[in-house]
Length: 553
Image (cartoon, rainbow, N blue to C red; front, side, top):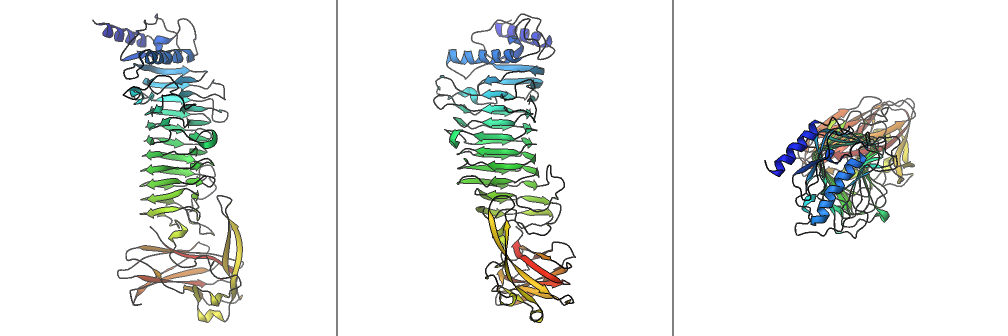
């Protein structure tokens, strides 16, 4: 039998004799081969007769052993992996490792940091060495440093309510080292019970890749990126997450540094405050979501209200169900979900709303957001106005006429002649604040005074036809409030071909006490349309705040 086979058999024997991470080892540790290959069992590095109930020194001794081999040989291309037998391991101090030290599970492994002082981090992965890069450029980095392929690696913190550290920290602290935290990440890892799950220090940190992992039940952030002054150094390229879940945190992704590019493929974002939150120091970079499921949002899908410029978020072929997470008394109705200065692009998104808006027509994307493109949108149950820029009729907010303009003299709206003699109305100014930030807005409205016995319907129509395309679905909605009884509304789309040839009408009528919406498919040959909105059974003072038409995709 050769030396390597004997070593592997002896290592397997030590595993059979070990019942878990914190159990005493009956055998004398195997002699340490100065130039080993293959793997070493973590239990080989347990101290004889000491440290029962605390596995911190065993982990650090094993990691330092692999680190010593790399420093002696000046090479990371053929280092042994560290195999962790299934069990619970009690850790009371941070574990410091490097991207080329491989911690691999054999069965389910629980790294229990619940007794860790609350201000400390769990596992830190840095490459702060004087090891010179070879022609292979640190080949040992190119696989997960936390590998739960043989059974999940769970990293449990001191508790979501009191922890001040992060479960996993990646990145260097100084820029002078030749080593980078590059091509590093994790597979089949669960991080819970911390201030945040994963913190990225953006100094020589890039090409990270995490697979099939869960970052859940952490107080503040699932992923947090920050550096002093907001400046990153050689960091942020292609930070990739595939088949991962981010759940139960105030922010799923919190970026407060520049030059960060994140990619999320087939990931789930469940029950967070904000999904993407850009801090004041964030500038430059793109966050892209592909085939993701996003559910349970108390805050915003994208919050860039305080961020710098040159940021982008891109959503492709994903599902957004913005049911509230903690504020369960609030309905899952259309509301603003994107705010701030980051460019926004979306294609093939299915928006799932369960309740209609009440009293206000709020776009999902804020007016201040630079929109790159929006296409192939679909809505489940409740239609919504995606973006104010998608409105196709002029003056939907009654903002282009001066306050005091009589209702019969509006530039872009006409009123039924039968009602003009009996109605008193004008443009008025009302001040409102944006729901999601300190962006103040001044809005105008049409205010009408209706006689108590006025039961005849009156109408507002777009004075100028707006363009449409055959096959498109157009939506109309009106927000109106009244001091008297609430009435009903009837919408009618009149379609025209070139030359003003009428092609027919599509009508729909609302019920009382409901935010009215209408939907119509543009017929073949149509190039223009006019919207006529009839108000039926309204009395007292009526204030029309918005009357908008938009394409649903």
